[in-house]
Image (tube, rainbow, N blue to C red):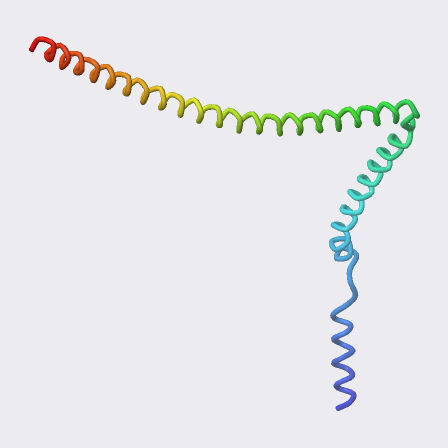
Length: 135
């Protein structure tokens, strides 16, 4: 029985065989393609790095110009903030002035109405006086 089991096992191992060259190529081909693409990308990146490292460094004058531009930009931003606050205040002042103008117009209308009423009262009083004088 032992011999039979060993024979069957040995026969199974022999029939299953080792990996063939074709199988290995099929399995490694996609990996080789990806590796080639990665090598190409690496070379491209290395080329860009070499170009960047070949650029001249900023001089002291360049840095001073950059700092000056940065300061000017900050001043412009601060001025813009200040003008924005002034504009908001003006908007508030305009709203108050418009409200005062509306109140003044309403007061003027009331005054005109009172003047008309006083004019009518005066006419009535004159007529009454004239009638009194005629009697």
